Amino acid sequence: MEEIKVGEIVYATISLRDVKNKLHELRKVVFSREWNCNYPHLDEKNYKRFLSQNGLATNKGDVIEAKVIDVNILARTGFKNRATGYSTAKKNEQIRDSVTGAYV
Image 1 (tube, one colour):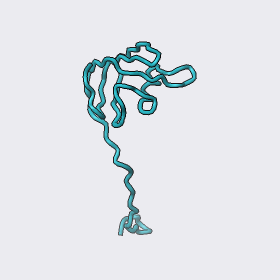
Image 2 (cartoon, helix red, strand yellow):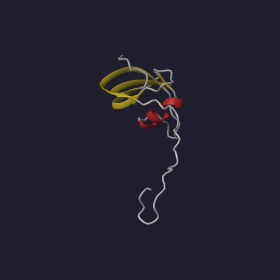
Image 3 (cartoon, helix red, strand yellow):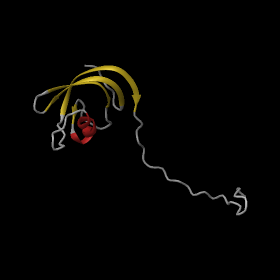
Image 4 (cartoon, helix red, strand yellow):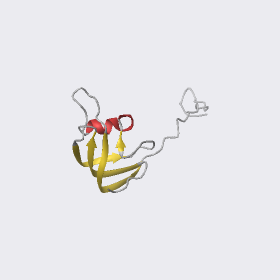
């Protein structure tokens, strides 16, 4: 199994084993490892969208948690940007001319 670093985005073929002990092979998928997770265990809290988009959900929409067994990385595409929070916008203090609309 190849190693995926924290925050890395990869294009890979991934083999998973769900909680019902059933094997799933996801071929040629884009996978990104979250910053705060217990990888290789893919839980519903961190990987809900990835699991549901790749067919690991019941008919009722419940996500089936899984564990990564094998990863065959086809390409490493980079790293995610780590969010540092929101920035605040500053009000424009320039005054416009009422006739031309140009800044005074």
